[in-house]
Image (cartoon, rainbow, N blue to C red):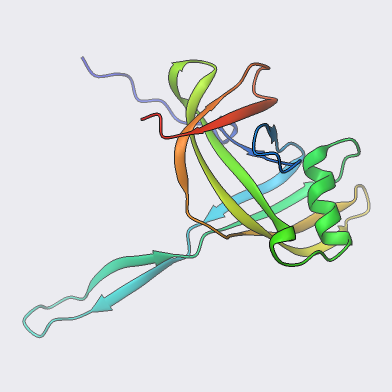
Length: 167
């Protein structure tokens, strides 16, 4: 018997950042009003002389996540991105590891789910937009390959640990 099809709510895909750079604990990215992932695929298109239509293949990606968040104090994720933006930090010092967790793909229990981790360059755009809250905007752009694995939590998904593989 087939399982019932269920609509996945946006809140079931959550992001976590290694805000302290330890590689051990990832902190949930809260207070974001936008966190949309663009794949920016590269295509190879051609039309063969003996066919009526064109063919296309995806041959690469240039992933980017556009972000926007209301700045909160005592939030390690906000502090990390704000420091990169405000102090105009460059190069590898402006890179962060982010794990995106699919809470709708539970593995062994509600505390272990499918996740993908990647190193991203923080590309700030604006800060200070708006009159009600201090708003930061920009993009995370891929600075490494994606690693699929699992995320595990012990605190109700406020933080998590990432383990590569696990399939």
